[in-house]
Length: 450
View 1: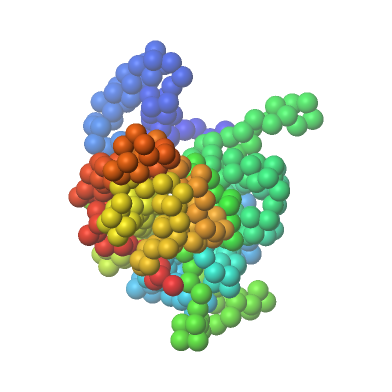
View 2 (view 1 turned 180 degrees about the vertical axis):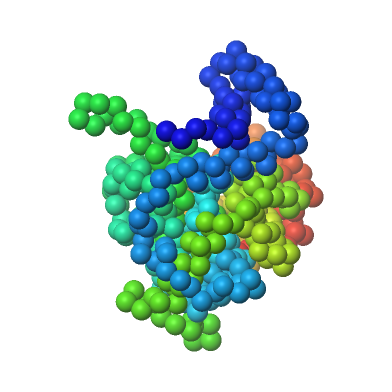
């Protein structure tokens, strides 16, 4: 085994300091980290660069292996420094796919990210969805599989088969038609989708009576997902809504799996680029992109900013837009706003919960999609919102149905379950004030409404 470099030794100490099993182990590692920094004339400000050097040393120490894809070592026509990975991907996908600008930017950055994902702790997931069929979801997956790092060959597989593929080495998983699989298989794939986003995650299996640790970390993309994603999976997923193209917006080329030379050339460029690129592993985040949202965006924005100021700006805007869209279009927030519209229009207070449901589905507003509700994740099949779904959304903002009486009838009136205007006003004050999605806030979407 080759001797560890100083940077690799520091990385091992730092891993114990940040992830040791006991306080004593972490304290001991902290003392060793401080001693290493002092011995090498470094400070805590140098830790990031030391870790980057360690990862480079790790890669250099790996024994050479034959490429898993024959395109990995092929030459490409993009030697001119004017070419950038995201620019090339963005350009080539525009020939095959109809996407709105922010969707195209995120999709392109994510494809580039698959080639360098091991440098980052979190690998966000990508889901291609649409309200209408024939919107290009499957083609989006086909094109991505020509460009992403070592894609799985199957369209759909069991969780065990996918986990085995991931354990073979760095790769990317792309799956289609996940809404068609059986519930038990869906739960197993949801587990893989949910836990495999984090670097170093492994699962213990018994193989021939012996315990084996299987690596689960890899980027994942899904298309045609229907009800596949639950709220837990949503938190690590970029939901990209595909548009149904028209005669005017039809793409330049139709995808043909036997004619991918142009895509293959970009793939070869990405492999050469990934082998030499030095990325800022902690790029500056746009305002408001914090916590889990920042973890998801870090790899994408590192690539965007490495491709120049213009791509950095476009990456920041796409991530910010997506986050704002998610916050403004949370169905419980929209329902609060629409509830106040209903109270104003009907001039009644309180209102029966059953009538509230009926009036929601009658609203004629640009963002009133209650007859085509797609669940809290936005990925279910479109259907009229049901009473239990209405109750679940309102409970998120503190609104529960109460025993009410018709106004003006006092104790003589027959009780019913319903809502009061005061409940919606209070929810609006708490959740829809500036910083949230107030009534006057613009409706932000990744795609143009139908």
